Length: 114
Length: 109
Image (cartoon, each protein chain N blue to C red):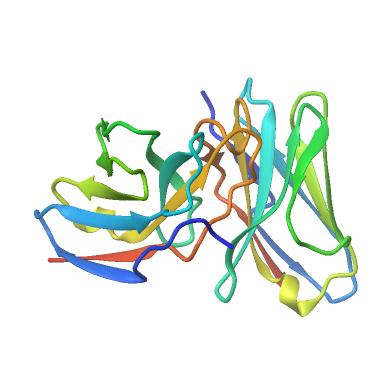
């Protein structure tokens, strides 16, 4: 089986712009979760989508949003980018969800905001 | 806040067993203990998980105390490729996963 793929792998944006990141889960997985990783805050949970519905949400402002399509592919969007949004964004997929069973992580998208 | 606490860093000599402790004193009865590791700038990799009983797979062993308030991940013969940050997580059902700071394991040649 192919692993979790994320596109693009690297991205440079300017403050105030918006960005969309994409995640393709492992075939058959229904849950996709998104995480932000920065040196200062570590790995932080953004949100989880399960069968096209947001099931869990972390403590991030409304500028961070996501969605999941019927084929389980997911996108996350960050609007009005700030310098502090520079981070590695990771997505993970699993069959049942974040709290049940192992998660499979993608390689991440490294976002740099200038 | 993370439900688990781990030492920030540990050293282990190559070829020796690496024993990584994790405290989860407030773990609920239905929460599993999961271990992941993250090698520099890659996505975290699942290692092992357990509920009550000790578990072993091709990568590691997981020892959970009888009261379930702590656990130890054992890498039986550490190699340089095991240098990574190791995360211990307690989670169940529809929980969101909360990663703590993890333990940075240095394997010394």
